[in-house]
Amino acid sequence: MRRDLPFEEISPWVQVPEDRCEALDGDRAADVVVIGAGYTGLSTALSLRAEGADVAVLEQDFAGAGASGRNAGHLTPTIGKDLPTLLRLFGRERAAALVRFADQAVEFTEALIEKHGIACDYVPSGNVLAAVHEKHERRLRRAADTAADLGGQVRFLSAAEMRERGLPASFHCGVLEERGGTLDPGRYVMGLRRAARDAGVRLFEGTRVLELSDTARVRVRSDRGSVTADVAVLATNAYTPALGWKRATVMPLRVALFETEPLDASQRAALGWRGREGIYTSHELLESYRLTAHGTLVGGAKVVRNAWGGALPRAYDPGAFRILERAFRERFPELGELPVRRFWGGWIGLTLDFLPVLGAAGSHHNVHYGIGYAGHGVAQATLMGAMLADRIRGREHSCEAALARSERSWPPEPVRWLASRLLNRALSIIDARTDRQVRRRQRRALRGPPRELTSLP
Image (cartoon, rainbow, N blue to C red):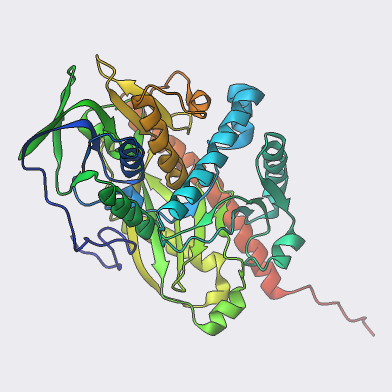
């Protein structure tokens, strides 16, 4: 396949660890077997191991090679599609509980970073949901009011307040999520990997799961061995349908991302952005942007793709990459021709109501799962690990009730394929109209005010 754009097979955040663990070889037993060594799996293993459980974690590549090492690194209390929608769907009490869940997810992640001394360049700067056109101001004011009314730590930023904070000029107004910030997702997941191994978790990398049996004692089989345990945990998010589980619950979507070359001093000065807040836009299909500790700019989203039957869409998508780069150029004219160093792709798991699900499957209810983070998995997947551990130990986590609901199923193929493509197309058209309006406004600004006509003699 010809690749005429700089493409990273996984992401710039992670690489194969020098101490890569050996693959599973032979038949073994454990108290709990966890499938997937991302945020959910490692957090679950750490929580269980703290209570003395014998935990085996199986990872098809290496810890962090999946979505946990591919995302943009926004630690955010965002929950659901948007809070007004949550309020309409679930009512005030449940919506407020979901806000508390999202806030607690951020707090739990921050505490885990501190507890295990994970050096992941975390900046607790908050994140800003920003409008690129003034027509979205009313919507953002309503979202901020709703969030504050439900107990969220958010506030609306006017255009003047955005400028006072030094946020880039392309972003008109916004909603500041005061909790959270940005981090290096690769260093974070590798920190969890180290902590899990230090705690005695048995990690098997390079181990692709071929079968998970639905039996009283589960048996997870790979090509070279197996693990038998009382309980299994599916910590596979967007990868879950490929295992033959929860096909109707979660749909894998591919998101594209990019990273620029480092900004020089003049570009950094022209840009401002001194607080390094994460930014994501109020488009229907949002754009995300953040600065990194090594002076680059990372952005992504804007274009999402799904594949037939719950398969993972391919990571390499030059059409999506070009759309992303065009959006980046339009949002950051201060950076001139700053080169894009590389593109990559990652996957998110989306449920029909944009909320994560926590539950137990199988005829013996011993296959536990926490999936469907809708792109907000840095915080939510981390807390989900503690929630899964509590369920396995027969306890109910304080946030479990917020997620308790009947799981909604995606329609079967070909309806799912057609509906998702039509919806994606409709949302893209809405966003394209907004972007055209922004370009017209920018052209008018460049031309300046109309000249006054001189009086005729």
